[in-house]
Image 1: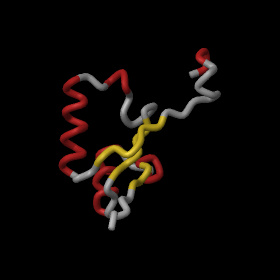
Image 2: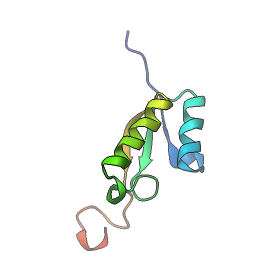
Image 3: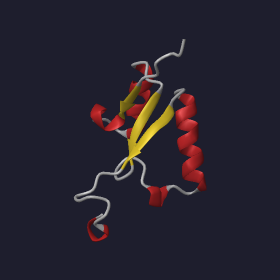
Image 4: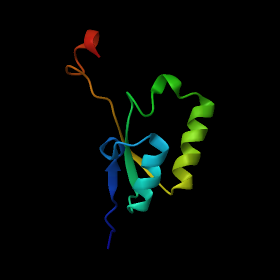
Length: 81
């Protein structure tokens, strides 16, 4: 029988990124949702940044379940993304 996996939105913990990962793991989460506007900015994800992120996730035995990117308007309004 498939096992239910638990994910947590890191922003809901209101902690710095590394501390939020640690807390999510301690709470028993299997995966996390990260915020691409604040926690993990795509513009800062160089090869080194990706390796560092993978290492952090591996250290806490977590996976990325989702990446969110909140906008002021819908994704079809390109000028206001």
